[in-house]
Figure 1: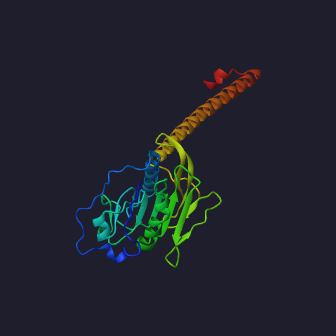
Figure 2: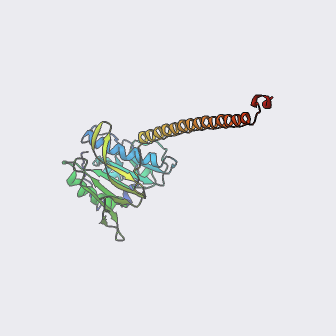
Figure 3: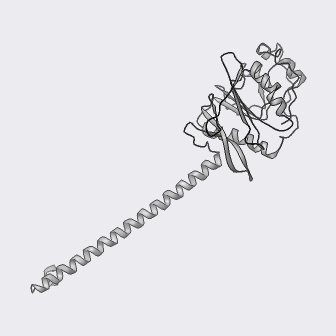
Length: 271
């Protein structure tokens, strides 16, 4: 996603987030598409999987490719295009939004930001955007991932000095997102008919956080397995009943032979 940033992160501070007269003519669509179809899928995968994982929660907002307006100067100049993926915690997640307007959100900035790198944006993502997120937004955690170079996964967390400190990956190359209590790591597979290495969420135990369709598929597979197990159990019960009936028939035959050997007619005894 292309990025234009003219606001100085040193001067566009938090104090500007609520201008005396908030602009009312904000633009929420610059008419520019994502860098590639893979970037779009990668963004939607993060949004949809987090929404699925936190389906019971209503106190967060996950967005992507949305403008974030944070100062009157920046809003007037229209010089900022938003992160590829971001999460804001402890907000009303059900309120419809065209973009994230900080002065309409009680001064809240994203708690987590992920930028999807491309050749045209990598410099800004590592430079001026990173500085903005660190010094003005004070976003606690910031991640970078290149959908076409999946070995590139980087992350930072604000330290005690309110400066970004690099995160150390685990043995799988994953990075821990403290704000979400989830891992960010790679996953190879096909999404929306495109095969690639994708950035995905994993829970504390290392289990993949599923997309809605993956949950539905898993549930369908589980239902099918349960149906098969129920069918097998019913078949086993039927076979056991048949075996029991056969044992009882043979027992009656043995008993009848013994009675005949003793000079008794089994049929007469049964009458």
